Length: 253
Ligand code: NAI
Image (cartoon, rainbow, N blue to C red; front, top):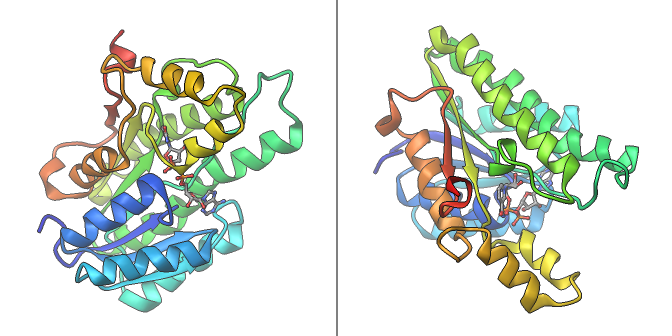
Protein backbone atom coordinates (compact mmCIF):
# COMPACT_ATOMS: atom_id res chain seq x y z
CA UNK A 1 0.00 0.00 0.00
CA UNK A 2 2.36 2.70 -1.22
CA UNK A 3 -0.30 5.45 -1.19
CA UNK A 4 -2.28 4.40 1.86
CA UNK A 5 -4.77 7.15 2.76
CA UNK A 6 -3.19 9.70 0.41
CA UNK A 7 -5.64 12.09 -1.23
CA UNK A 8 -4.77 11.97 -4.93
CA UNK A 9 -6.25 14.09 -7.73
CA UNK A 10 -5.66 12.70 -11.24
CA UNK A 11 -6.62 14.72 -14.33
CA UNK A 12 -7.51 12.91 -17.54
CA UNK A 13 -8.45 9.94 -15.38
CA UNK A 14 -11.18 8.70 -17.71
CA UNK A 15 -8.93 6.95 -20.23
CA UNK A 16 -5.54 5.46 -21.07
CA UNK A 17 -2.63 6.38 -18.81
CA UNK A 18 -4.88 8.36 -16.44
CA UNK A 19 -7.32 5.50 -15.96
CA UNK A 20 -4.50 2.98 -15.41
CA UNK A 21 -2.98 5.38 -12.87
CA UNK A 22 -6.26 5.72 -10.96
CA UNK A 23 -6.70 1.95 -10.82
CA UNK A 24 -3.13 1.37 -9.64
CA UNK A 25 -3.47 4.16 -7.06
CA UNK A 26 -6.72 2.55 -5.86
CA UNK A 27 -4.90 -0.75 -5.34
CA UNK A 28 -2.16 1.15 -3.45
CA UNK A 29 -4.67 2.53 -0.94
CA UNK A 30 -5.20 6.04 -2.37
CA UNK A 31 -8.30 8.16 -1.85
CA UNK A 32 -9.15 9.49 -5.33
CA UNK A 33 -10.56 12.51 -7.12
CA UNK A 34 -10.80 11.70 -10.83
CA UNK A 35 -11.10 14.71 -13.13
CA UNK A 36 -11.82 14.63 -16.85
CA UNK A 37 -13.72 16.55 -19.49
CA UNK A 38 -15.55 13.28 -20.18
CA UNK A 39 -17.61 13.18 -16.99
CA UNK A 40 -19.37 9.91 -17.76
CA UNK A 41 -16.14 8.00 -18.40
CA UNK A 42 -14.54 9.59 -15.32
CA UNK A 43 -17.47 8.32 -13.26
CA UNK A 44 -16.84 4.85 -14.70
CA UNK A 45 -13.20 5.04 -13.56
CA UNK A 46 -14.41 6.10 -10.11
CA UNK A 47 -16.71 3.06 -10.04
CA UNK A 48 -13.83 0.77 -11.02
CA UNK A 49 -11.68 2.26 -8.26
CA UNK A 50 -14.57 1.81 -5.84
CA UNK A 51 -14.76 -1.85 -6.83
CA UNK A 52 -11.05 -2.10 -5.98
CA UNK A 53 -11.88 -0.89 -2.47
CA UNK A 54 -10.91 2.77 -2.83
CA UNK A 55 -12.87 5.87 -1.94
CA UNK A 56 -13.26 7.75 -5.26
CA UNK A 57 -15.38 10.41 -6.92
CA UNK A 58 -15.33 12.06 -10.33
CA UNK A 59 -15.27 15.69 -11.44
CA UNK A 60 -16.26 16.80 -14.93
CA UNK A 61 -13.87 19.60 -15.92
CA UNK A 62 -11.99 21.08 -18.86
CA UNK A 63 -8.50 21.75 -17.51
CA UNK A 64 -8.09 24.43 -20.17
CA UNK A 65 -10.69 26.49 -18.32
CA UNK A 66 -9.24 28.53 -15.44
CA UNK A 67 -12.47 28.63 -13.40
CA UNK A 68 -12.91 24.90 -13.95
CA UNK A 69 -9.44 24.11 -12.60
CA UNK A 70 -10.10 26.23 -9.51
CA UNK A 71 -13.39 24.35 -8.98
CA UNK A 72 -11.62 20.98 -9.45
CA UNK A 73 -9.16 21.75 -6.63
CA UNK A 74 -11.88 23.23 -4.41
CA UNK A 75 -14.17 20.21 -4.86
CA UNK A 76 -11.34 17.84 -3.97
CA UNK A 77 -10.51 19.71 -0.78
CA UNK A 78 -14.18 20.15 0.11
CA UNK A 79 -14.64 16.37 -0.18
CA UNK A 80 -11.43 15.14 1.45
CA UNK A 81 -10.14 18.15 3.41
CA UNK A 82 -6.67 18.13 1.81
CA UNK A 83 -4.64 17.26 -1.27
CA UNK A 84 -1.52 15.09 -0.99
CA UNK A 85 -0.82 14.13 -4.62
CA UNK A 86 -1.68 15.90 -7.89
CA UNK A 87 -1.18 14.08 -11.19
CA UNK A 88 -1.45 16.41 -14.20
CA UNK A 89 -2.13 13.87 -16.93
CA UNK A 90 -4.90 15.40 -19.10
CA UNK A 91 -3.61 16.29 -22.54
CA UNK A 92 -3.90 15.67 -26.25
CA UNK A 93 -2.02 16.05 -29.50
CA UNK A 94 -2.79 17.46 -32.92
CA UNK A 95 -1.02 16.72 -36.20
CA UNK A 96 0.76 19.37 -38.20
CA UNK A 97 3.93 21.37 -38.76
CA UNK A 98 4.07 24.96 -37.50
CA UNK A 99 2.98 26.15 -40.95
CA UNK A 100 -0.02 23.82 -40.96
CA UNK A 101 -1.12 24.52 -37.37
CA UNK A 102 -3.91 27.08 -37.01
CA UNK A 103 -3.52 29.73 -34.31
CA UNK A 104 -6.78 28.67 -32.66
CA UNK A 105 -5.68 25.03 -32.61
CA UNK A 106 -2.31 26.05 -31.13
CA UNK A 107 -3.94 28.18 -28.42
CA UNK A 108 -6.50 25.49 -27.56
CA UNK A 109 -3.79 22.83 -27.19
CA UNK A 110 -1.57 25.10 -25.06
CA UNK A 111 -4.59 25.95 -22.86
CA UNK A 112 -5.00 22.28 -21.98
CA UNK A 113 -1.47 20.83 -22.09
CA UNK A 114 0.39 23.79 -20.55
CA UNK A 115 -2.07 26.18 -18.88
CA UNK A 116 -3.91 23.22 -17.34
CA UNK A 117 -0.71 22.14 -15.56
CA UNK A 118 0.19 25.71 -14.59
CA UNK A 119 -3.25 26.44 -13.12
CA UNK A 120 -3.63 23.18 -11.22
CA UNK A 121 -0.18 23.64 -9.68
CA UNK A 122 -0.86 27.31 -8.93
CA UNK A 123 -3.87 26.38 -6.80
CA UNK A 124 -2.56 23.09 -5.36
CA UNK A 125 0.89 24.23 -4.20
CA UNK A 126 -0.28 26.73 -1.53
CA UNK A 127 -2.62 24.08 -0.08
CA UNK A 128 0.18 21.52 0.02
CA UNK A 129 2.68 24.02 1.44
CA UNK A 130 0.26 24.94 4.24
CA UNK A 131 0.10 21.28 5.30
CA UNK A 132 3.87 20.86 5.14
CA UNK A 133 4.24 19.17 1.77
CA UNK A 134 2.89 17.17 -1.10
CA UNK A 135 3.74 15.61 -4.43
CA UNK A 136 3.04 16.61 -8.02
CA UNK A 137 3.59 14.33 -11.01
CA UNK A 138 3.21 15.82 -14.49
CA UNK A 139 2.82 13.76 -17.63
CA UNK A 140 5.25 15.15 -20.19
CA UNK A 141 6.52 13.06 -23.13
CA UNK A 142 9.73 12.02 -24.84
CA UNK A 143 8.89 14.75 -27.36
CA UNK A 144 9.97 17.23 -24.69
CA UNK A 145 13.55 16.24 -25.49
CA UNK A 146 13.50 14.79 -29.02
CA UNK A 147 11.57 16.11 -31.98
CA UNK A 148 9.06 14.04 -33.92
CA UNK A 149 7.61 15.04 -37.26
CA UNK A 150 4.16 16.50 -37.80
CA UNK A 151 3.44 17.30 -34.12
CA UNK A 152 4.93 20.79 -33.66
CA UNK A 153 2.40 22.17 -31.17
CA UNK A 154 2.35 18.97 -29.14
CA UNK A 155 6.18 18.85 -28.92
CA UNK A 156 6.27 22.50 -27.79
CA UNK A 157 3.60 21.89 -25.15
CA UNK A 158 5.39 18.90 -23.64
CA UNK A 159 8.71 20.77 -23.67
CA UNK A 160 6.97 23.44 -21.59
CA UNK A 161 5.65 20.83 -19.15
CA UNK A 162 9.16 19.40 -18.62
CA UNK A 163 10.70 22.88 -18.15
CA UNK A 164 7.91 23.95 -15.80
CA UNK A 165 8.40 20.75 -13.77
CA UNK A 166 12.07 21.55 -13.18
CA UNK A 167 11.39 25.23 -12.39
CA UNK A 168 8.59 24.45 -9.92
CA UNK A 169 10.65 21.72 -8.27
CA UNK A 170 13.31 24.29 -7.36
CA UNK A 171 10.84 26.99 -6.29
CA UNK A 172 9.01 24.67 -3.89
CA UNK A 173 11.69 22.34 -2.56
CA UNK A 174 11.67 24.24 0.76
CA UNK A 175 7.89 23.84 0.99
CA UNK A 176 8.39 20.06 1.17
CA UNK A 177 6.76 19.59 -2.22
CA UNK A 178 8.37 17.19 -4.68
CA UNK A 179 7.55 17.88 -8.34
CA UNK A 180 8.52 15.38 -11.03
CA UNK A 181 7.33 14.22 -14.43
CA UNK A 182 7.17 11.09 -16.52
CA UNK A 183 8.14 11.16 -20.19
CA UNK A 184 6.38 8.28 -21.92
CA UNK A 185 7.30 7.02 -25.38
CA UNK A 186 4.61 5.52 -27.60
CA UNK A 187 1.88 4.11 -25.40
CA UNK A 188 -1.03 2.12 -26.76
CA UNK A 189 -3.95 4.13 -25.38
CA UNK A 190 -7.27 5.30 -26.88
CA UNK A 191 -5.30 8.39 -27.99
CA UNK A 192 -3.63 6.17 -30.59
CA UNK A 193 -6.88 4.52 -31.65
CA UNK A 194 -7.86 7.92 -33.07
CA UNK A 195 -4.53 8.24 -34.93
CA UNK A 196 -4.84 4.70 -36.29
CA UNK A 197 -8.45 5.04 -37.36
CA UNK A 198 -7.68 8.25 -39.28
CA UNK A 199 -4.67 6.73 -41.12
CA UNK A 200 -4.98 5.36 -44.65
CA UNK A 201 -2.96 2.21 -43.90
CA UNK A 202 -3.67 1.26 -40.29
CA UNK A 203 -1.25 -1.68 -40.20
CA UNK A 204 1.64 0.33 -41.66
CA UNK A 205 0.98 3.15 -39.19
CA UNK A 206 0.84 0.70 -36.29
CA UNK A 207 4.11 -0.90 -37.48
CA UNK A 208 5.76 2.54 -37.72
CA UNK A 209 4.66 3.42 -34.18
CA UNK A 210 6.01 0.09 -32.88
CA UNK A 211 9.33 0.40 -34.70
CA UNK A 212 10.06 3.78 -33.05
CA UNK A 213 10.90 1.93 -29.83
CA UNK A 214 14.10 -0.09 -29.46
CA UNK A 215 11.84 -2.75 -27.94
CA UNK A 216 9.78 -2.83 -31.16
CA UNK A 217 6.49 -2.60 -29.31
CA UNK A 218 4.28 0.10 -27.89
CA UNK A 219 4.08 0.57 -24.15
CA UNK A 220 1.01 -0.15 -22.06
CA UNK A 221 -0.71 2.52 -19.94
CA UNK A 222 -0.07 0.32 -16.88
CA UNK A 223 3.70 0.55 -17.49
CA UNK A 224 3.52 4.35 -17.27
CA UNK A 225 1.20 4.20 -14.26
CA UNK A 226 3.90 2.27 -12.36
CA UNK A 227 6.34 5.15 -12.95
CA UNK A 228 3.75 7.70 -11.83
CA UNK A 229 3.07 5.66 -8.68
CA UNK A 230 6.79 5.53 -7.92
CA UNK A 231 7.08 9.32 -8.22
CA UNK A 232 3.87 9.84 -6.20
CA UNK A 233 4.98 7.59 -3.34
CA UNK A 234 7.63 7.99 -0.66
CA UNK A 235 9.79 5.49 -2.57
CA UNK A 236 10.98 8.47 -4.66
CA UNK A 237 11.71 10.62 -1.59
CA UNK A 238 15.04 11.87 -3.04
CA UNK A 239 13.57 12.79 -6.46
CA UNK A 240 12.50 16.27 -7.41
CA UNK A 241 12.78 17.94 -10.81
CA UNK A 242 13.25 14.48 -12.32
CA UNK A 243 11.88 13.61 -15.75
CA UNK A 244 11.45 9.83 -15.70
CA UNK A 245 11.63 8.41 -19.23
CA UNK A 246 9.47 5.33 -19.89
CA UNK A 247 9.90 4.73 -23.59
CA UNK A 248 11.04 1.19 -24.47
CA UNK A 249 14.42 2.62 -25.50
CA UNK A 250 13.01 5.12 -28.02
CA UNK A 251 15.33 7.94 -26.97
CA UNK A 252 18.35 5.71 -26.29
CA UNK A 253 18.86 5.24 -30.01
P1 NAI B 1 -6.15 9.36 -23.74
O1 NAI B 1 -6.74 10.16 -24.85
O2 NAI B 1 -6.42 7.90 -23.65
O3 NAI B 1 -6.54 10.02 -22.34
C1 NAI B 1 -6.50 11.40 -22.14
C2 NAI B 1 -7.60 11.79 -21.18
O4 NAI B 1 -7.50 13.21 -20.96
C3 NAI B 1 -9.00 11.53 -21.78
O5 NAI B 1 -9.82 10.90 -20.81
C4 NAI B 1 -9.50 12.91 -22.11
O6 NAI B 1 -10.92 13.04 -22.02
C5 NAI B 1 -8.79 13.77 -21.06
N1 NAI B 1 -8.69 15.16 -21.46
C6 NAI B 1 -8.25 15.63 -22.66
N2 NAI B 1 -8.39 16.97 -22.68
C7 NAI B 1 -8.91 17.33 -21.48
C8 NAI B 1 -9.30 18.57 -20.91
N3 NAI B 1 -9.21 19.71 -21.61
N4 NAI B 1 -9.77 18.59 -19.66
C9 NAI B 1 -9.91 17.44 -18.95
N5 NAI B 1 -9.60 16.24 -19.45
C10 NAI B 1 -9.11 16.19 -20.71
O7 NAI B 1 -4.58 9.63 -23.85
P2 NAI B 1 -3.33 9.04 -23.07
O8 NAI B 1 -2.45 8.43 -24.09
O9 NAI B 1 -3.71 8.25 -21.90
O10 NAI B 1 -2.64 10.41 -22.63
C11 NAI B 1 -2.52 10.84 -21.30
C12 NAI B 1 -1.38 11.82 -21.24
O11 NAI B 1 -0.19 11.17 -21.62
C13 NAI B 1 -1.52 13.04 -22.15
O12 NAI B 1 -1.03 14.18 -21.50
C14 NAI B 1 -0.62 12.67 -23.32
O13 NAI B 1 -0.13 13.80 -23.99
C15 NAI B 1 0.49 11.95 -22.58
N6 NAI B 1 1.31 11.08 -23.39
C16 NAI B 1 0.75 10.04 -24.11
C17 NAI B 1 1.56 9.24 -24.88
C18 NAI B 1 1.03 8.12 -25.67
O14 NAI B 1 1.82 7.58 -26.47
N7 NAI B 1 -0.21 7.71 -25.52
C19 NAI B 1 3.02 9.46 -24.94
C20 NAI B 1 3.49 10.54 -24.13
C21 NAI B 1 2.66 11.32 -23.40
